[in-house]
Length: 368
Image 1: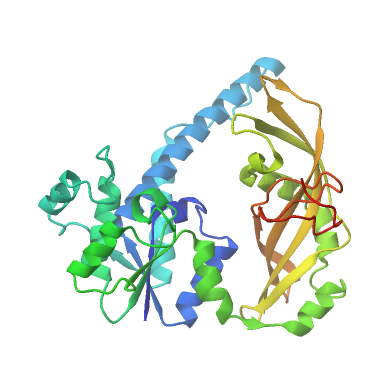
Image 2: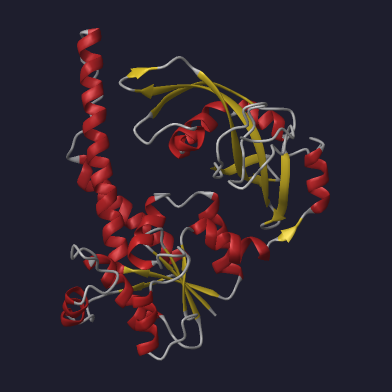
């Protein structure tokens, strides 16, 4: 039996939980021996974060609408009432509860956690508390797992990207020693609670291996002969979406820029005719999951030293997951990742994918 616990940050990364990673999680819970647990505090925090995000976005939208009205000298009646916020917050909370109810998830309250347990933890600076005495919320979540979810005859997977408060200093997927000591005091093995630093990491380890391979479909996709997906056409028809995702996810230090530099906008993106098809797997009798990678070339502007520089051409590695509806020939979900790379080859421009590489894997030139 596998118990799965979600932290707030996992949901905040996909507010409506409609992305491919959540679709895979749903499939796993429905089809495998797994149970989903959600601490009540997570529901409360995600709802509050959604309210804060909406409030900030509404104010920004109204400010921009006001500026448009000044320019065109005309009222648009398009401003969003801040009074709508309470209704939207309530609707979002209901959405969360219905989503987890459909998966038969168990919501775990924290009312029975003794306050003196948290005080003792804080005073001793035991994780998730830190030296600044921060970590109250995370400590409640950990105590919830410890007291209400972790049991000796099951493995509990805690999915969180909060490495600082839960993980070992050496490995983001191993619990901190303080938390391992808590398990020992409960006579639980250190394998009874396992940390995953992202939903993607969880799916890569537990879910994707369970999906059935579709090698005959893979062969057709490689040749762009599959009737429900032509990867070359899809890339060229979805450049706006891909550029937007690159903006959100790129680490410009991989391109040799500094943290205080900023990618302002991408002017164009080009894809080669070749792509690397990784896996094609069957999710159900309708949907398949297609994973592939490609090297693209972007023309981008960067904000450096208080001014825009001339556009620069850079090559980026991209990894994609596409959820394909094989009945309607629709793309139902897209996940884009930019894998870590270590600059570009000075000869051909291709990304260097290893910090230990001595020669470029594309052109063979020796790297400096």
